[in-house]
Length: 382
Image (tube, rainbow, N blue to C red):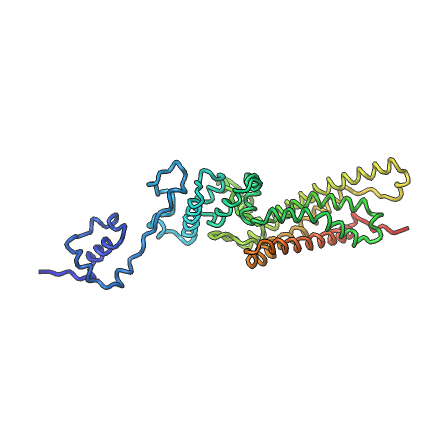
């Protein structure tokens, strides 16, 4: 009578089929029931080497159009996972965790914004982002803001983004006026028209200075295949050159430099437009004052609208761009938030202090820069 060794291929197949929960799906053709008693004689260490099955994602989080038996649209297939690279494994992991959290909060993909649902399906967002969206969606104000993709990308990346925006705009006028007073000294009243122009420019620009360099969770859809090289390059750049990349995604040094260039171009347009509005309003007020009081013709000089606007656009593209990128991506996201993420009140207070100091510094730098390029002159007391 011939006996089969416990280490023979046929016995190994029987081992897998006996102990593996899914073995009957893959090995039923090679299973020989007469050899099953031999499995009990194998050492325990051989049984423990059998890999655990990969479970499919929960069907509760899938769109209502899919039934619970359809597992072909996810990353739950173990054979596909074994053949994918590290990026694919990370994307599948992100998708499974995000769907699990979505099921926990009782939401389905088809109830989410289209771009967020596509990002979850593609494994481009983590479970933490999904949970943050569910928490914010409970607030009426945040639910309204989450309808806009720009706010949605920034709020999901930083739950204090709205507070930082309020801080910046709130302290902007006070800090800039105080800086103007310190820099101009006794000439503050004589240069009041210029001070007004600077404050108006600050009000218009402060919003964009927080909005554009803020770290984001990218939810934008992929570009068309016929997109140009330049468009494709900037499309893949982060919104902040120093922001932390989400799991499964990374940015090269060139892409981070591209973020500075792209935001610089946007801030140049914003700064020039804001200055045109601010100096235009101030110039109109000065002309109205001169029409009423003829003695002001020699005391108050007209503001060079075009040259001031161009100079302010360059200042925003260079100085403001770099300062706010470092503030959002380095000081806040990489230094303060990892340490104080469980102490929101203290974190908000420190962000307020840092942003106030940055705004005050920016006002001082603008006065020096404007005088250096000749768009503002020092008024001598008579």
